[in-house]
Image (cartoon, rainbow, N blue to C red):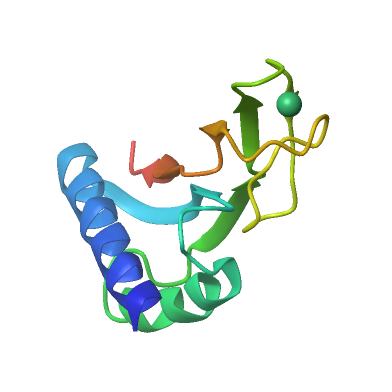
Length: 116
Ligand SMILES: [Zn+2]
């Protein structure tokens, strides 16, 4: 399962941050997932507790921020938000478009509690 391996690499990053900052707990992790990234946000949410089991990330809240697909038209120059996965210009229906947003897949933030 694609999302499980993503969740596992996410947990690895969290473990690294926890080690570096000597954190005692991880209340929240925020990831940014583009509509065109090929990652199913629901599957990622479902896979996360499995990947986080017996790690410092266990019990953390996983916040998934979705980024809608946005394309810029090469014909008319307009930016628009088509319905993924069909990428065309909403203005002139041209399919000659460049993707401006929607391919994102990254960790936005890892919140940790540090024992003072
Ligand atoms: Zn256009």
